Length: 157
Image 1: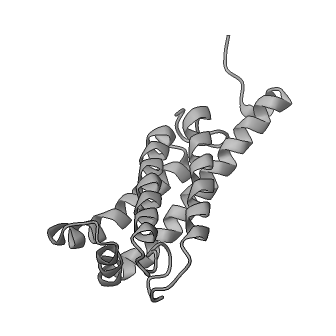
Image 2 (image 1 turned 90 degrees about the vertical axis):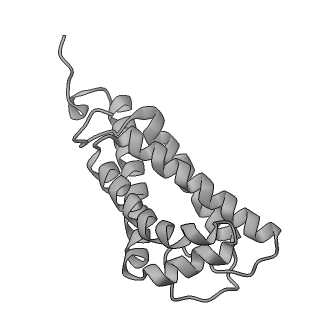
């Protein structure tokens, strides 16, 4: 018995494939977009990391340089559907850390900018919308992790 492409399967399977494709494209696109300003301005990203007061001084610059490139690599893998489950697991883990860091900053009364997309902004931004957005991303990431990459993926998982 041979496997049939998604467009030749029943409507339910095709919808699942395209739902995973949608989740993959949204998450990959968001992380790719989020990495661009961080790569262009590692100094501002390092300052954003510093403002959270969670990373030791020796790790701030290292994290500011490596993290955006990890986001790019995982986002591209997800967009292509290559090693999609592994990329989803990595991005999901990063998203959980981001949510915890923002929650920690809120709990400690820090008035900081999240450093997520636009690094040119200053502090004093509402973190709840960003946390809610990250929770939506986690739902989409979970979809890709559980169901696979969906339609038009280079890899099988």
